[in-house]
Image (cartoon, rainbow, N blue to C red; front, side, top):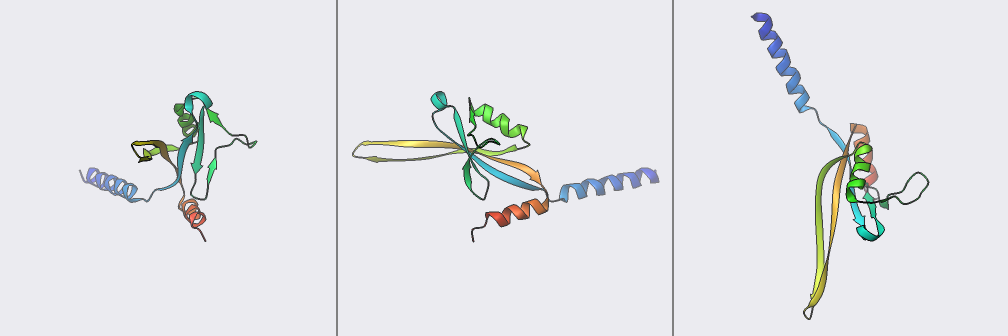
Length: 126
């Protein structure tokens, strides 16, 4: 009985420690541009340092057939969905007007504390 009690205490302390460990993530905000049905899905990435167009290793712009294709691309690189949303803006004058809606994803990837601190340092404008 005494051994069982010690094992239970050890288990509780290990689980408690694991739950209190700080996790760090690098974030990207992904937004879209273009007419999906005509041009395909073009992606812009805000990585905290700059907003840039998504390009391959050769510098060519990556265009996806659908938003799901873009999402699978990021998941394949180790990113996970943190949040998705949309912003709208518009105006009207004399009874006419228009609006524009943009959707975005906030993706994250686990990192070390050092990688996180470096990303924060690079994100601050000097």
